[in-house]
Amino acid sequence: MYNYNYNLGKLTATGIVFNGKGQILLIKHKILGVWLPPGGGLEQNEFAHIACIREVFEETGIKVNIMSHNLNLTGEYFEELPIPFCIRRFKDNTADSAFLCTAESYALKPQKSEVDDIGWYSLSEYAKMQSFEDMKKVVNAAAKHLKIV
Image (cartoon, rainbow, N blue to C red; front, side, top):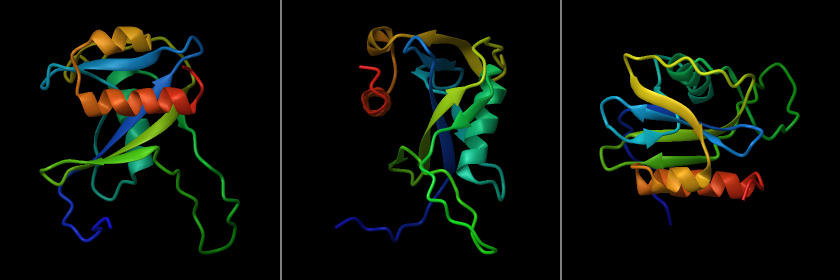
């Protein structure tokens, strides 16, 4: 049984964005030096899905919409929040919510203060790039879920 009683450290959000050609949006992280989908830390009192949209735009210039199930809950006390595709938890208690996103445009505008490079890449290209294995698993699972592979 999974233990949900843990002290969360930093909260982050990641946008997994594919284009119409089945390519994934990736950044080369300036500090980590690896290729990852865009994302970053939540600001104070910010929901993870809002951080995802903000971080993708800040790092790449791409406006995105989050793909989510709609439960059709209505009423004065309801606000539907997008459901992450997955949540990754790290040894330092960082929790990263990864959301599937659709892009409103494909023209890239890198934020040079945070990324060394950005681009749209095929899954086979990403498989050869330096990244984290757990993120590659998430990206491949997302592509399978979206029937890209």
